[in-house]
Image (cartoon, rainbow, N blue to C red; front, side):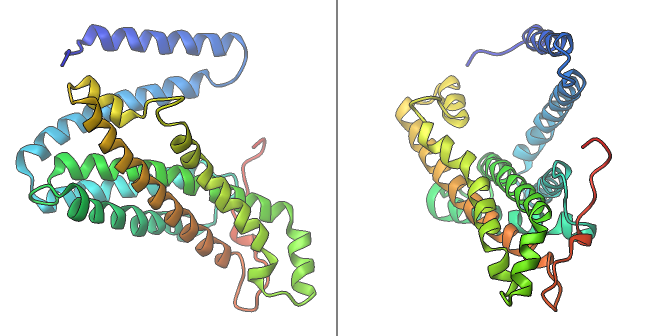
Length: 267
């Protein structure tokens, strides 16, 4: 495996700075966010690399569970952070986080105990990367789906309330919005699966090949990961949308848009 040096990282960083300068010259208003995101990625990945080195050396279930819990907590925050009209209070954070926990953790445990089968099953070399990929993709699907549903429910509030007045239960009044939101959350995963190997080489497969693994072995791992991501994303998106849509209505089946956070001016 070819080892990258600090100079290699600096060169890649310079390319990002050049891209930021281009976006600034074009007045796209993304240069600052690009630089901040790049700095966060650099610091976070270096810290994670150091933590994983310690974690791999210990291979203790409690440490693995604690690391996974931190990953879940941060994923829950990121899911909430980029929604235009998220649910207020603990519900905004809790629904997406719980959906990711029930879907990603369940799929990861099944994969570790029944498919990959490392010994022990919580071996961090396998458990942490697998859970990270599941959480990352499920997080994206849930965030897109929730953002679509809450914004569409706000925009179509008149139509929803008209259906309620006509006697439809809340499930029917918002059924088309829920279905459309679920489809939106699943599109990135479906696109990634459809284009795998034809348009792009997925990240895990590429990493294994660069690390010296036989291509066919890397392909088998990537197939398993893609299928697991699809399952986790579908279950997570469906669970999050079901919980969030129920939260939009009270016990008397009235639409409660006051449970949505109002976006700041200009957003």
